[in-house]
Length: 300
Ligand SMILES: Nc1ncnc2c1ncn2[C@@H]1O[C@H](COP(=O)(O)OP(=O)(O)OP(=O)(O)O)[C@@H](O)[C@H]1O
Ligand SMILES: [Mg+2]
Image: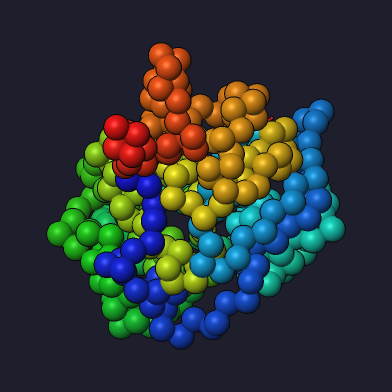
């Protein structure tokens, strides 16, 4: 699996943020002591959560089922009202106020795991145009932006297709193109590959690559540890709070924490543990097959 990473051949910042996007001020996502409780629930889904994500940063979020990842995604996107926080800011908008949440919905794109729930139009290009039409963009501007997004996410050939006839990966790319058609400053992806087969997953990961290159703050929620590798930073949630924030190697190198959180390791790390059990130790733990090959080559 290819992790998200920036690279020289990736699309330019302008194709994501638009040529007139203002210079972003870091951090774009900033919450302190964020709390949220679902109606009727007896415990907080978010129980005093601290997190900040800077412009251009790609932060992975991991945690067991029920740890609060999707709730965090919805709150950062301005889709729910926080129960409280000392700071709750998304793209300079105060998430504690109704007006701030409305403005955050415009600046923070959110992509969920099920593409079916996010596709609304009769054909791919109308779907990509949907958000811009709601913002009352001029028809020529919509046409140009939609064409740019179709090309960026390899959808041009599919633009007249009905979304429900697409593959899972194509559907999720259509949903992503629609989210990013509206110029965004931050993007929250909630397990966008979870419902896809390996080919669809690779398509979406490829599309997600380079998003951070344009100054977009990206929060990438995943249960796939291979997708964490390549992130600038990883944040681990437990019971609605952050219990780890730091490097990817730092998290996976802490075996006790990984076990406690029930996370597992990237495939190369799992393989390294199996080799360690038969006497071949690796330090540091390799997180990719390339790192493992280098470690093996260096020792032979
Ligand atoms: N609509 C809801 N009503 C009541 N409680 C909810 C609702 N949605 C989530 N919860 C609860 O809030 C907590 C956090 O849930 P959340 O969906 O944010 O976790 P998650 O980390 O995204 O889990 P998963 O890995 O399963 O997607 C859990 O205890 C969950 O049971
Ligand atoms: Mg979830």
